[in-house]
Length: 188
Image (cartoon, rainbow, N blue to C red; front, side, top):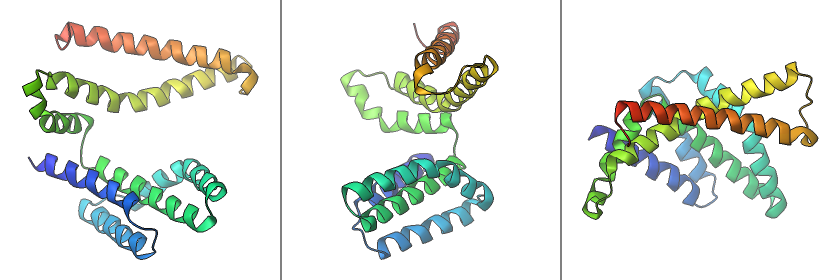
């Protein structure tokens, strides 16, 4: 039950960050909440900063797009809110595993059993979805290194080759996971 409460608080908090008005107080308060959560959970500050820096290109791109469509103040607020959400997501990920999150989602989906929806399947799908992110990242790096080793330039002209290798490796990985789940009796 504790995991469900923490998960719901995380979802509500991250959603509220984006629905609060663009005012400096609505950025400072979540910032303080993030810092307090990091202290309570004892998150390594260096790793949290590295995580945000790794996401900085995405955040900057979002900021630039918002600057073009709106104005620089709005873009600054959106970028700051993204940093806060990425930070609290990192903090949350330090307290839970993919399988704990999947189990929490299964518990939250329990009322769907009235409609004869198998919540065990939902749990498996959520666990697979979360655990596939690092696998996809590794596959992408492997394909990139293989292309560099074969002297295939990393540009738009060669994207057909690169994406085909990437998609083939993903399909192979998904097939392996499917076979493992069938053998364990999780799916028919």
